[in-house]
Image (cartoon, rainbow, N blue to C red):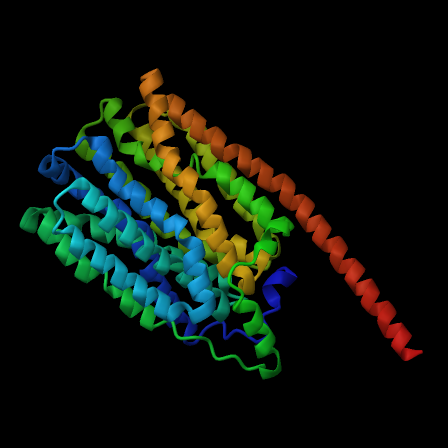
Length: 432
């Protein structure tokens, strides 16, 4: 049985039917949110030459976009709580489109920071949180599977956008490509149109449910034991989460691997990542794992840390291929569970606010993690120390999650027993 927090919805979720259309819409929306900033890096060299700026200056375009996406989390949550997922996602698609079109007329790098980074980043935030939130309204028993399938959108769209962007770049240059990408991202509006509100059948409880959902920001979450465990562990984890992916190809080149083979490592990683996300959803939905899914997440975080710690021991290209496979498994497992476990802790009703608060706090490690990891490479002149550091930054929160969730599950069981005992005593009093 899932924790009580996830079960008190006030209505019975359909757990299928039109919900799978909603999962498809979330697949597209989440895919663009995570894949779009990464896919734009193909244009960086030409933009760098066009504006005569340094690589670090151009690299801030994606960083600002990701940071804005995370920072806008609470705003997105407020809008979702007030208006629902469908209109917010559609507005988000229009914002990203507008940002890309305006950027195509850019005359300075600051212009791109504002258009692609800020406007586009806010638009992606309006795609991410609503897509994650609406799954919790349509699914309960099959929710881990639904979340796993929706999160698969990230590697699928990244593997699609990467070659497409290369084709657009070769054919139209960066300005023409940005105009075309602005129209492509309007598919988020189509995805949003699929996200119609769930039809609730237990009407007497609907008003109470709506009262809870319409809260703007629920700061009482900072008193929620499970939420605080998730937040503390994730803040540390995100300092080491993205850097190993960012530096995989440069690390291979530094070892003497040719450019094509080095780039192929990311393809291997993405393919494994794409495969393991829905598999993780299926496993998370089983009767053996679902009741204690936080342990599964703890294992995924720890597994990432172990992979990074062992990476420098890989010798030659074959060793890096093995690392890419195991890292793809670890990264995909963690990504598929990342938001499911938060929903498991706080419940579907409070999830929108919870994810908004989490993302704005995670904004700092998301923005600073890769640059700090890169600084280790500059200081020591060797990538292995960066991988050791990322391994520790993943393994420590993984162990923290194991310990704290053992404590949390124990407290939850005690609270349920006390509640059952009180209910039994109350029933006895009514009988007499």
